[in-house]
Length: 221
Image (cartoon, rainbow, N blue to C red; front, side, top):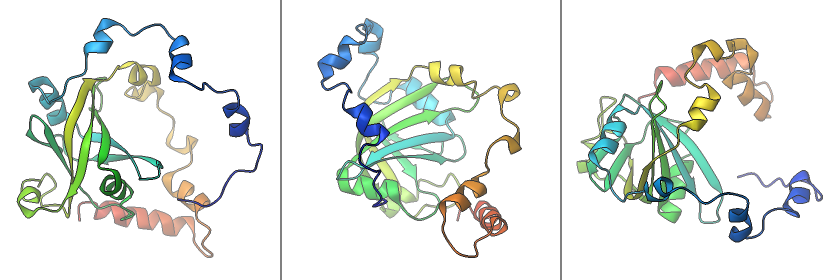
């Protein structure tokens, strides 16, 4: 976390002074949810949800540390890389990343996580919320070999809520329509973003690009 703070009188401070203050005020802004929306949540992984997870190659994990600092990170792998251990329990194998371990740190501190499973090219998604822990149990890790070998650890989630998320966001964003994707050079590359954030003397764009290529080459190590 950064120690920098925005100046007093920031845009956020100005908007927060007039922001919604209570959940009753918030509810007054909207109509009541439909009966279908109210009843869509279940407390386990049913057969259909299990099938969605089996076809998902991308999951977003939301977590927060003990002080409430939030984080969302994507995890990807071959379709079905997240294992359903039983109708209440999921296991997400860890994969090589930048080794900051932000998500795992948060889960160790608070024991909670939220998931959104995504299937590329489809508007079907699945949300799961529940208790979570980080496991290094060899018996579990031996089962999680979707990338060819056991991971160093796994995030285990005990399901408290599971439900199909509304597909409107994916449809509105045209996320799966290649004809509406931006050209590769229309936005900053990941290397350019990294360079803009790093204040390291002598660091070059070519160096970051090479580091990215090396990281992708060894992404399952």
